[in-house]
Image (cartoon, rainbow, N blue to C red):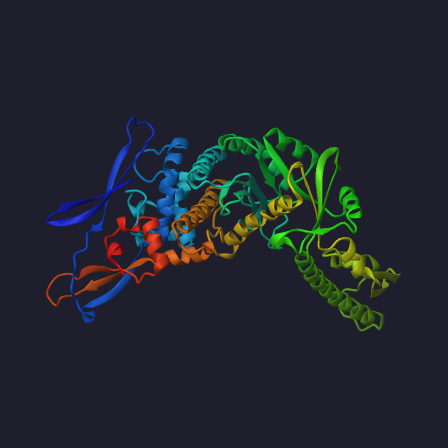
Length: 564
């Protein structure tokens, strides 16, 4: 991508020239597009002007600068070259990624979004980059193509931004879709939805991020009904390739207890990864570690001084592992809040069942009568969550058609639950040389993946949904574009902070960039002819000026180089 100025009919214009490879042609195809005239100094009064919209510069320009640095389009052209006229697959995916970060809307609005952007990543006509072209270009693109692009971008990002990859965090989640039940597809399936909805098909996403800046390095889209362990097992070959591309070395994969198992631990070791995960407190090894740590917990130094921990070495499923038992008051408070809420909800429903049984025994109950069988099923469902069954004593008696229900708190159950389970985690790792503090800190890095998921779900950065994709190909491409947008935004924030900008969350950083835009005015001089278009720049603070310099935003317009 090259930007230069050219004089046309006595007026200077800023020109963007790009080149890309086309399948079947020996040399790259060059294209040019005008970014508009170089604005002259125009004197006018407010009465002569009318606001007519704006042009995005900051947010889109920063993401394009990072994408150009990573070589996003080159990576796609190497994996899947374009064919003839129109946008390539890489140009389409990048356009959607920019939209997901800057203005997350349906792809029917993609053309309007690109029309608002002054920075361009290619010389393609805006009207050719639309939702129909997205579905046409992504049809038939295999997972291998996206995987090849991911590995190339991860290698480039780690080299350019010196990301710490000694500890990598891995986790899974799923997203709701609105795909009808009879629509065929392998990705959108009914499974255990994180949103607690059972009426929608969901799509799973496995994501791995770096310890520096929560930058996505690898992801995999999978069916919503697949198990986390099987997904990670199928991803091991790609993770091994990524490990080799990053130069090998001692690299630890941190994950939660849902992705654990003896065979999986061995397979990770074969791929060059060390392992750090947690055990369910109910397992035999965890109970043994908890019993061994009684009275031996010691506070950790620094910011972890409120966390007590004790480490020992033992066999876990015939594997030699370092086991860390940690106890956190913050975790305890959070678990108690969840337990108390679940207990209050269960007591409310159980009291309602008791009132219904009283009316039923008095002959005043209308509708379907409760039986011992139906009552047992309801009680089991009400007490299945958040340790409710360990706190409540629920007795069902009576005859089949005339049941009775008695509910009472188990004396000392809450204190025993706190003493034995709540607020505690049991970590296992094969990093025997690490200190207890380092192991705990490394495990806590997994919250960065969870933060990335929250950004994609709550509308902070790179929103995934609501998704209006109906095929596996479009779902896979849409998810790739969303993760790519999050990757570009995370790297842009790192680049901004290293240039001297104020450290801030990624969402606040994108909001700062979005305020760097040009206001479009129509100026009428009172004579004949169409009004003249004039752009005026924004008011800039110190961080905005740092962003303009860090991402070279003034190359798109001379206004930003002179704006105070």
